[in-house]
Image 1: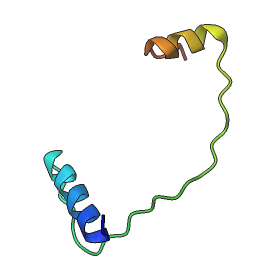
Image 2 (image 1 turned 45 degrees about the vertical axis):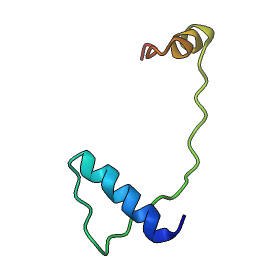
Image 3 (image 1 turned 90 degrees about the horizontal axis):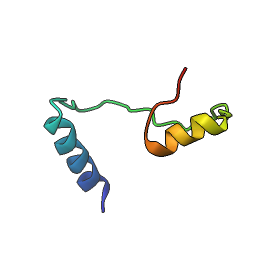
Length: 55
């Protein structure tokens, strides 16, 4: 898939969510290191069920 095809697909998806992309914009997609969250057993169970853990 070429760059233009990717841009067009992304543009269509944004428009479906009422976001209008404009030309000549730069999007920063930098990957940054995040701290590792240490979840306890109770929190892991909640996450595995799809629930949000307390706190």
